[in-house]
Length: 137
Image (tube, rainbow, N blue to C red):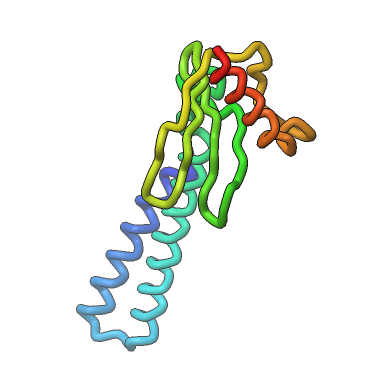
């Protein structure tokens, strides 16, 4: 709480000294120092506020997300194919700069854990097999 009380006191001191310097015709070097000190104070306050918002801000819980990414693969420089889970179904989408297209939908698979490690490397094979199963039905 002492830090919060320091900020208004410092700004009050800076403004009163700036007014006194203007009235007495003080040298510009002192005024420049006060301006720089005020700038440092404002930038420090902004950094502290950003840190506090990042530290104590409301963060979204990962478990409460309605849509989650199950897996994905890069198919070009800036293009990707993703499988997202929405409710009880999976949606295969193609993502390119400025564009998102739904490619296919399917029932949620029993292995609905996010892909990681070796499973993520074989995503193309898994996607092909799943699409073939869907088309055979």
